Amino acid sequence: MPPVLLAVAHGSRDPAAATSIRALLRTVRALRPELTVRCCFLDLARPTLAEALARLADARPVLVPLLLGTGYHLRVDLPAALADAGLPRTHLAPALGPHPLLAEALADRLTEAGAAPEAPVVLAGAGSSDPTALADTARTAELLAARLGRPVTPAHLSAAAPTPHQAVAALHAAGHLRVAVAGYLLSPGHFARRTATTAATWTGAPLAPHPAVARLLLHRYDQARTATELRTAA
Image 1 (spheres, rainbow, N blue to C red):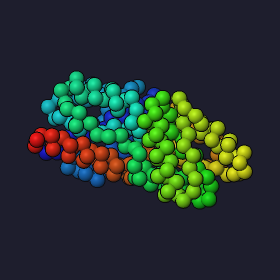
Image 2: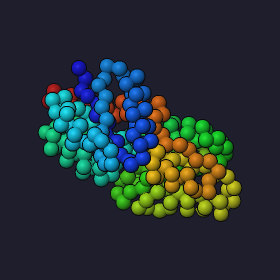
Image 3: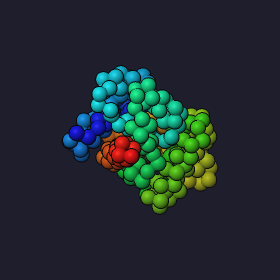
């Protein structure tokens, strides 16, 4: 049997966040019905990562972080949890982003919001003090710009500038009367609500449970599973 896929979401006090993650995982199961798929949360929701790893102690799961960039959780928290569980680093998949499949999902969310095809776009990421995470958001902005064929400005909802509000205001000041914001967030919650308060004409919804995100989740699982199998064979 293939290893269990343990999806590790950030967690939120907003119950709609967990609902969106579970909807995403239903799509994953439909795409790969032979897989056992489980879910846990880093904070504010249950089961916790420690609880999930304890339940799956004999299954040696592959952890797929439902994180859009490489930050502290991916570099520190998740490897430490694997070490505590006696699992090698190869059981941890990369972050979801950046990846062209996320640009596909972001573009679809803008279309669903009714955004005009000529409008400049602000990509509203969660933000981080980690330069690697900020670079990941900037790379996603490049991928989205290439897909849309128009400029995309990366922005950050915390810890870095510009904020989405500042980026939208700058585009208005430059003469762009109508601006779209692409919410670079997986789920509803505090950041999604803040994203919706800019002066943009259109705002894209969070990405989960878009089918492209489900395909990407499975791609990251396959990457980690292959690394684990190669290590075992060696």
